[in-house]
Amino acid sequence: MTDGRSRRREDTRQRLFVAAVELIAEQGFSATTVDDIAARAGVAKGTVYYNFESKTVLFEELLRHGIGLLTADFRAAVAGLPPREALAALVRAELEYIRRYRAFAQLLLSEMWRTNREWQQTLRLLRGEAIEVIAETVRAGVASGDLPADLDVRTASSALFGVGLVVAVDWLVFQPERPIEDVQEALLGIVRRVAQT
Image 1: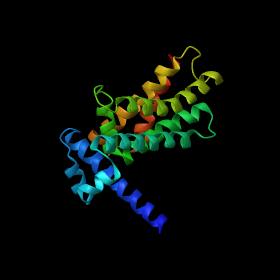
Image 2: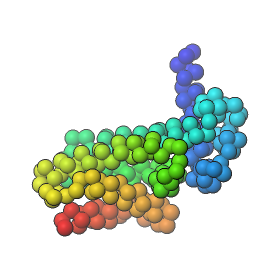
Image 3: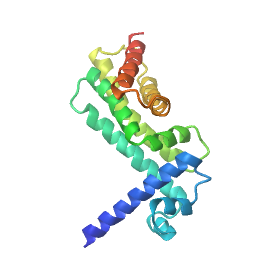
Image 4: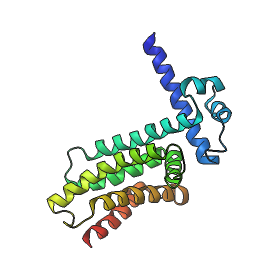
């Protein structure tokens, strides 16, 4: 009984996350109401407050959930791979993640520029966790000689994360017919050229 109840609660929370992401990506955080989220998720307004004490808490949990999934995808992609292959796997993992969670990626891209939000500290920490997976791979590439010894690991890792995010959103908005393999290869070509300079 408890297991069934917790599964239903998790399903409800997932529906609320999806509804919130879609609405906030469409109309912005301020314009999105709890009533809107409840209606889109197909639940009563009280259900939103039962699961999250406020719209802000819902959004902060949404960030944790979404970036947590991306970080887990990054970790799974690089597991056991040498640095050069791991970089390619990171690029592919980011593109696939953003294709799967397009609305969240658009939301994340817009929210990273807003520094006056209550959840900015949470976003900074979560982004840092995702970028640290990239940094571990870049450090390994420097140590193995696959990447230049004087490479600024932090900047390179942030750049790879940011460029991947922007390129993927651009691809899905403006060239959705383009195969993911083409986008991956183009992005890897940029990474390789930068690493050689």
